[in-house]
Structure formats: C-alpha cells, structure tokens
Image (cartoon, rainbow, N blue to C red; front, side, top):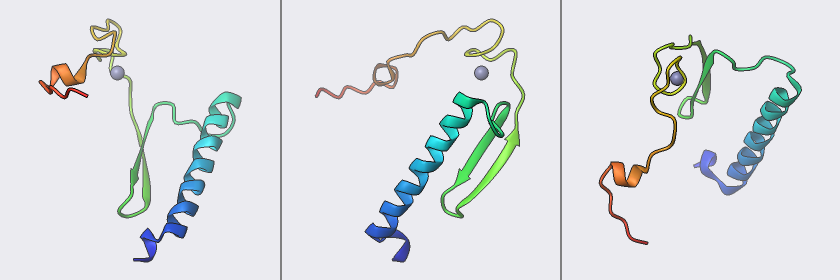
Length: 85
Ligand SMILES: [Zn+2]
C-alpha cells in the first residue's frame, strides 16, 4: 500500500513534526491564529481537520471555578490493573 510505504511514512513524520514546531512557535510568539477556545479534530482516515468552538465549563472539575480534581491519579491502580514490571 502506497500510504504505508516507509519512505512516505518518514516524510509524513517530518511533515507533522514541522507542523507541531510551527504551532508551538505560534503560541510562544503569540502570532497567527491560536486554538484558544477551540477544539481541533483530526480524522486520520479521511486526512481532514475540523475546528469546533468550545466554551469554558464553569463547573468543570478540572479547570472550572471550584476544581475538585487537582492532581493526576494512578490510572493502573484506578483501573485495577496489576502489571508488575
Ligand atoms: Zn475543564
């Protein structure tokens, strides 16, 4: 399959790395359109993007006015996974 050829994949990885670096620079330099208040959805099957406007939820337990979740949890313990390494 052409899409999954190693050469194409390498080029694709470099392409996305450049995109991410440009995006980070935009935030550092406050230039261009930032995704503040927006949700960017990438559909890898269709290779398409959608941008949705979102509003802050004042009751959000993480970033709302009175957050109740203030630190990360141990997901392996939370999910009951016992995976000794
Ligand atoms: Zn939130």
